Length: 85
Image 1 (tube, rainbow, N blue to C red):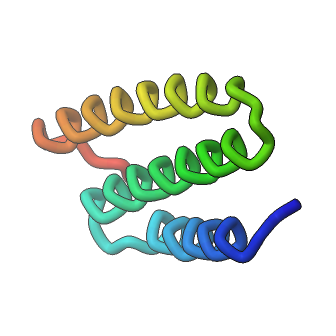
Image 2 (image 1 turned 45 degrees about the horizontal axis):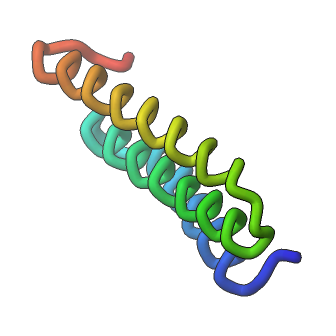
């Protein structure tokens, strides 16, 4: 069952996705991507606690690791003068 906390996090993910699409600079988009990934990990952690299934924590750890790696790679790309457009 989805509670009010999960709904609030999902709504905030929607707001972050709007920033991801509109964000005036590539850095804004990168930060929005990182923020959305962190919120998704939060949802996975809440799901793990409420359902008492540890597999959700395993998924959250893998997702967080890949997300961190992606942010680092994209930041290096932007730092070297790359562009998303």
